[in-house]
Image (cartoon, rainbow, N blue to C red; front, side, top):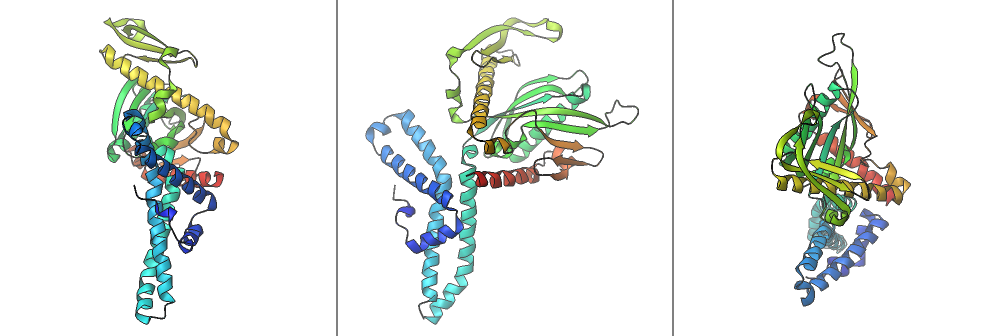
Length: 376
């Protein structure tokens, strides 16, 4: 690999970059350049190249670094070109100065765009590296109406995933007595999926007149949402020796056996007490795979949440903590709007429920970006 442009850029170009990027971000970029150079050197080592596991891990890390270092290299080159244009403007050559004046505005715009792209990549790099996540929706308070609402919330995310071209696989669902869902679990995979929906964890409150309400009174019901990332390091969060596994027959309503063959898989993570029971399919192997995947995500989510809480008061106040007790949004059917309490904005209710979440997602991402930058 050739040396990164940061290792040979002119002081004048660095001064232009300094005007576009805060000092703390430039320091992080310098550290990333050094890390990338170190990884390049390791990958040239035959002992590392022959170790598939290690070389793959290094290559994955390098791909993550490239999200910031590639636009950073472009910015440095653009800054160098700007320096050249400034020199032409001062050269005394009328023709060359005219050409420089014509090109300078466009190049200045490009440098600003590259700087903004770098900032976004720096503060969201961790989320960008997560290829899939587990989505869990559960009915909250409100009885049958809460189950109906949970079903609508789950379908909202499925519709959004379909619009974005993401793969959404339903792992488990349990219907409510009067329709809807008491809970639903799905895995979602796709480019940018977790980055887009990471802020959806929390309590979703609905205010509307239920179909069964004869007096036309508005009821309040809730559904809770959890978004649990499945990054590559999620496997390390779970030691199989700490898990108790039991295989039983599937259970139906009232506890009766609905399957005479032992296909249901029940896992208990002994250190945390977290439990998963999976009986969605008639295949013990498929149920086991889904159960382990869900348990890994739950253990990872809990440990990550604990680490976040210890890290700093600023981190705790950031949106997207995934705290299920936090009411993040109220859907008001009478007014036809959904109010997100973190950005204090209203969004068209019908569009949201149809899976048109892009405007909402962008607003949450912009707030998160500003808060992360303030905390860096």
